[in-house]
Length: 321
Image 1: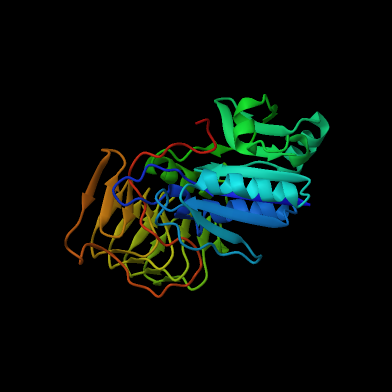
Image 2: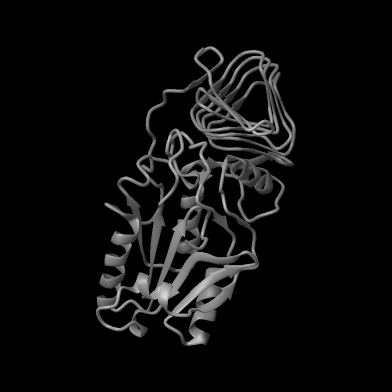
């Protein structure tokens, strides 16, 4: 039996306090995509842990399969207790991942490597060092020993990840992930259908016949693009957003549930509701005029994390503490 423990946090909170892995990128959050990968790797039981004080904005995850969600005082503490339970239940292997970024990896290959090494713990590495992804064989851990503590005390087998890794340390990395997904530089693929080469549209997206969408670009679920608007240069407009009449969105990300007003030129930026982050200048502005930028009010659909993005600096994905 193969189990998995997914840990969200701890993260730096920034102004709005949402981990970047909880934000939609090309239609789904990084954490949802990881759970999909675990399911494809035949993981039977998945437990998702978040610390109450660490990731307050993480809400729901959409999945076709049951997932156990746990909010504890600290994510690591809850995960350690869960690991002990997995050991008692006879789990052969446990995948442990602290999710703070995006990584392309082959789970089945990692599991085979772990089995061949014959050690209790395997940890993933890349060129920059250790990653917060482990495979643990509970049978190899002594009774009464905290498995998470053992991971830091016992020399693990080293599994080298050759795939794409984006540590999502800051919003600029979030923007880069969207671009890399649109240009096929990583395994992240846009949701929805490719309406024409390089242009992806998710369910319910509406683009006015007098608007232009220049490939590559992504138009998210339930999004509306008004007439005379232009979406270009690897821009992504996430779910339930609206780009109004005559506005140009160039080399930018408009995050879920955001409204972008009439006649604007948004370039090299991230829009999150009434917040605008210009990546070239590294400046964040809160726009008071709701006719310019605002957060859309839409019914909760239980689809993914629909929370504001923290514009603070993250702690890095899958990296050493």
